[in-house]
Image 1 (cartoon, helix red, strand yellow):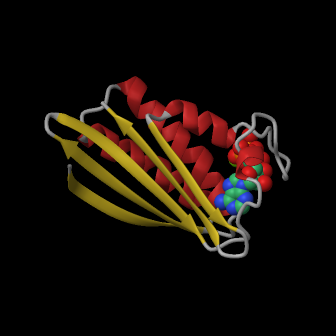
Image 2 (cartoon, rainbow, N blue to C red):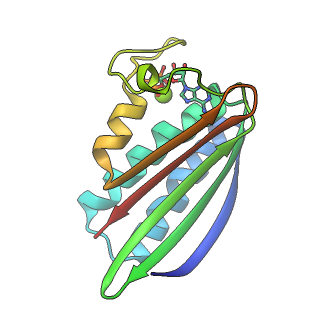
Length: 134
Ligand SMILES: Nc1ncnc2c1ncn2[C@@H]1O[C@H](COP(=O)(O)OP(=O)(O)OP(=O)(O)O)[C@@H](O)[C@H]1O
Ligand SMILES: [Mg+2]
């Protein structure tokens, strides 16, 4: 598997979430994703990026376009140095929110992607990795 392109973006505000949506869309188009697949990864990015801003105290996103033979994919890595998540299984449950949300962001993002990974250390931060392949 090769990394064809990579871009790092800050994620501290709602405006950054908008820019992230646009950048993820552009990379998905470059990877040759269909409109449906573009929208899936953009929606997932929006949910996880919103969490990075709202709960993680802000952080960064790395966008990578990947190639594995003829297959192309987009990998998104969201990193923050926020409070972290003590119970990951609970955070992944539909309807669980410590804020005012519906608690559907993480579970929804997982359903929209082919690869999903979340690592979190209380007091140190959270990293969420999403992957979608054509
Ligand atoms: N980066 C993060 N840092 C710390 N806690 C997080 C982070 N991301 C998610 N969480 C925790 O996981 C919970 C579930 O996240 P999820 O996105 O599923 O729901 P939500 O953001 O509360 O609501 P919704 O996304 O539906 O508006 C959050 O309420 C929060 O407690
Ligand atoms: Mg959320």
